[in-house]
Length: 284
Ligand SMILES: [Zn+2]
Image 1 (tube, rainbow, N blue to C red):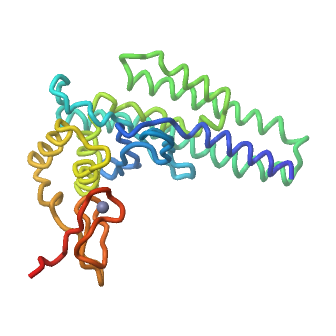
Image 2 (tube, helix red, strand yellow):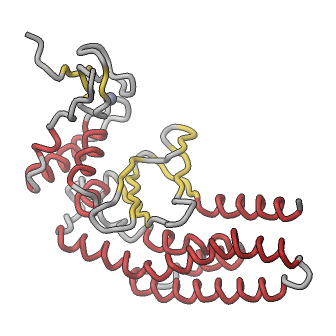
Image 3 (tube, rainbow, N blue to C red):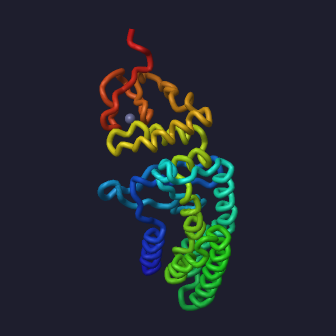
């Protein structure tokens, strides 16, 4: 019973360390391999006015996340980073974070499987010292590697790793997400649209670009739309962007923003405000 309570508290601490506050002017990219990242705009749990919580993956295998500003890069004042440069930034971040991800997954298994099992089998009294010693060594290893990776990635602010490190020491479950914490701001200098076009697949880029481009609720600025247009033309993605989804059996219409399919060929999309259904077949 006490063991269950301990696990529950541990889980709550872990989750509270893994979520962060974000807003709808952010693009959050998550994935584990370059070219396969998934994009979303803003929080996964919206609380007020487009602001809310985003969460990293809570169960192994963990993903890396990048958080980028939707509007950065679309303003003419900021210099546009080249495709190859963004690619290099992303791969650097991913390779620096890879060992931390392994250690984080190990720590997750240690905290949520090995430790409770050991206590259940042998009791707390004879085991707590070695269990705690292993935990301390593990967290210190993560912090040391985090410091090294941080200094390599964020040369402009070499000492900013300390606040993250303090959190990991004070709350060891927070060290599980060290890799995620490391990569999160690595593409901050890159606009969200451009970052997505580099590290997500063309189909994923077009999916999120459609959601932003045709959003009638939180309307994207002309600058953001222009940036999407530039990428669609420059990377020859216009065809994928404009393509209708493959019709599922019985479906007669779709939404050109979210690609939801419906059994009618007119009316509005059930999910998008102000979007009309497009018929699969032109009405004769
Ligand atoms: Zn829709």
